Length: 552
Ligand code: F6P
Image (cartoon, rainbow, N blue to C red; front, side, top):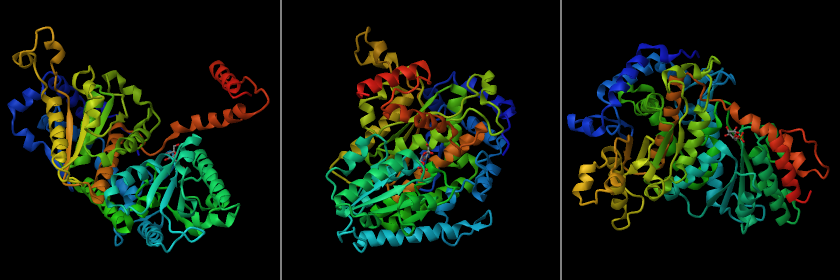
């Protein structure tokens, strides 16, 4: 893949001129000049309705943003990804999370291998296993039914499963509780296993590489806990530990029977993997049918992304709006605000998806993106994603969104039909959902504040500047399929942005140095001998203080 410098194109220059014009207007002006925009600046991606009218754009802006996507060669790059070309050039790999949700009768041969057959073979074995556990046919070593599943993994082998498990609780078998251990902090595994009935606990060790320090250490600790509980009987492990990995050899070395391993492939990136075997905990919870409904939702959004013209393509529009704010207005962060308690881990999940993907400073050809900085924010890449569910966030950080000095674009995600309809609560939730985007967009002027009888000295403090852009995503109900659509939406937003920026969204070399340095430091922390002061002066001093506090 090449990475042409888009900042040198006519499309980019046209957007610079557009920015100069739009920066001088307001959403109030745009709406009063064009009341039809509330109906018109919308798009539908499968069951997700997007209203992007409360953005600082006109139809002309959208046309220019779409021109930018065309100049970036987005169409051919989408085709290359879906076809399994090795677009992850630094690891020479295909990027085929979209193949994980292809229907059984589809065909896709990549590098000589029918990946659809492979995907469905694993889905079938996951389903058979899930049925056995859910029906009670698969028991623990002493014959007890499994009632707790502990997923041990980190990053993509944790965040997706936790997020989706929480999101789909309403569809779960409530007789099976899932817990998640990720952190190397011993507190995590300690608190998770504390009080658990070992005889009815199943551990899933999920690691693409099966070489991740945190996961293997936690898995060893959990295995020791289990074996000790069984009075040292190692044979108990086979009924209580299964693995999810691409690396059968390491799974066997660890001591898990590879008959109880569910595989996936190097063309599935960790942060794009919870719809592979990495989602085994989700399948155990919602059952094979629920899991397949989720995959169908993913696939439907894939097809929307692959086939819909850019000006009606929800992921493309949202990605281009992100580029618009990030590269022309200089906004650095992006809030994602689901008005659904079930989505309380959604922002955490998105942080890995978006920031591990697009936190890059060189283009695919190795040249620094900063070369583009001459044009202001032109050299900027990945935004900082963050968020919390509404309405909790309203009572925490929304103050800054409304009256702070920074413009922070935000995605509001809400559902018309609640999973639990308790009195008027859902209508109250959604009235906040609709009110917030209107308040952010239109604010309240000094005259309006004064007209309420506010004392003159307080008026400036109560002025709401407005002009704060938001997207609204409204769906009928949070279902497994809708969750799949939502995740695929953000996957494709992330990819589209990477194409415009000319970066590789599918490697993560930036996480390696810290791992290597931690491995070098670990023996210094635990050794009984005084270690050499061969790190930097700050680290040497901190290690010495740590050792002293630990009595070493
Ligand atoms: O350190 C980052 C990372 O490689 C992520 O990309 C990945 O999701 C996570 O670690 C866990 O990796 P694994 O599934 O191989 O244990």
